[in-house]
Length: 206
Image (cartoon, rainbow, N blue to C red):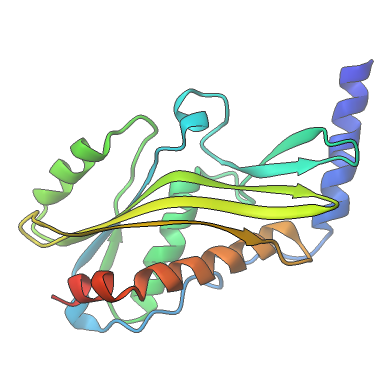
């Protein structure tokens, strides 16, 4: 009975937080980038190395926790049900394409190592951008709404040489409103920040 009530409560809580607003598409949530055609052709890959996904405690689509007033956590996934690597990858891909860069999204799977991914990308003869997620989740509570990230960004040239490795770690507050759209706006801003980093931008323009 307690388990049944927990499911009911989770559903009510989810409806309360998400409401009936339409979900932003990948195109709408894509970061605004200032690259031109000379940055491509480019391959983008997002690798999910979050420990709780690797050990199967959470699904690849896991996005964050929404807690009841008693602090009981309920796990929520991406709005589309897609793996987080694909969900974010599509938005980064659209950001580059909208900037005029010939871009392809490379599919990754849970358990794929960064070493094996970089080896595969180095064979393609194209410049590559790899985003590795070490932490990427939100924790939403009535009195505390935070989103955490720990990300490594790597750029390879078209011969597979590593041009730059950059790490970004931090915590953001979560805006009010539809949780899925609020998070997408947050992701958009993050990738605009990551990809405007001077070293990363220089590597992508080489």
